[in-house]
Length: 363
Length: 104
Image (cartoon, rainbow over the protein chains, first blue to last red):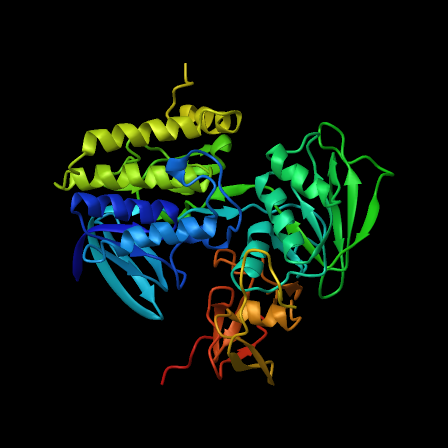
């Protein structure tokens, strides 16, 4: 069996950043990616990022993906990228079983970083399984990676940043966005994103949700309804909206199911998006040399995933005997960056969620 | 429907890739996944649910949710949203759980 030092599951922003920092310290790694390309969900993000320059603010997601891939290519003697490969098994003796184009193989690692990202949440309503009802991220992939339109007339559910940004990108691609509906009484995402689509004539209806979808083999209409502040539907306020695609953007959950194959302690933390592994400050789980980074340990932005991956890469390299020449400086800088990213009002949830995860709220 | 003009992205005219969908000869573009090619052709129903036979399309488009499973070259449960389209592929709507290859 093939034996390596460091295996990274997931070639998104966290995984690529970890491989890069580990390589700078001299540690080799194998990055496993189920898609045929790395870059994770950055490859469909045509919008510019916020934050500070260190996390590529004012750069489009698609370009950040290329920057991160470039960092890894510069160390191609140490970083091996294995695409079209799905992890099918993860064992407590640090062996992974893999499927690459239907060929089954095994690999053993000294340390493993799980950077598997997140998945889109779903919503409960009548006929929610009709074709034409898509995750907002799925629509972004379809449009921005493959150049295919999801439909002609779209209704967006959810006014968080993803809902607002994808609505704008639908408009850019020539799709009519009929409305954005939001069950809460306030718009969830940044005002700047909301203003952009409002200026283009898209209404954002707060206190509204989907009651049911209508159609035979594919979506034709949706019935929306007003809700009160406890999110109870208000009878008599139903409206039928014609549309051929419904985009669901009601948040993400950590894609942490893969960790169920290992004896690591998990905890449900709603503020981090769902079931997450219990970790220490270096992103190590309760199992020695099993680490996590990015959305899998709490849903945030790609910027935080980049920083978390870098921290884990540096730390793991050091653990395995490869100390980065500027370890302390890099580690302090990255820790500071993560704090800055979480310092605004949108970071409160993560900070509180991490406190809950570490049991710091327990009396 | 495909995007023809876009303010940020550039979708050049690509090579056609011919494949079979439910017995019909159709084509997608080079670089497409099976699901994106079918969607561009207006096909949204990819399979039926196992028990109630309700229509199923894709949901996540990144290989998570298994809502896009189809029979490809005789193999069932292929995640068509992350499987690249290839010339001559035989793609069919999946009904039921699917039957694995016969042992040869």
